[in-house]
Image (cartoon, rainbow, N blue to C red):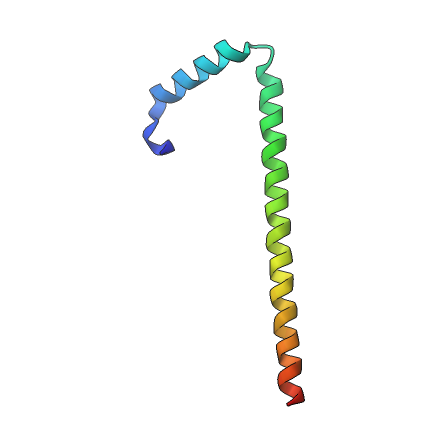
Length: 69
């Protein structure tokens, strides 16, 4: 979807955003978007690492059960 926007479409979006929010609010908006993306990325990494830990723990449990039998 985003690959079809092109440069003219992107320029139009930036102009509309500038008109709606004004030049004084753009830095605040950019910071808010950046913080949101950073928090989302950190949460996603945390979920992935927890999932990997659970898989590793499950594999260890399976190995110990197999050695007992």
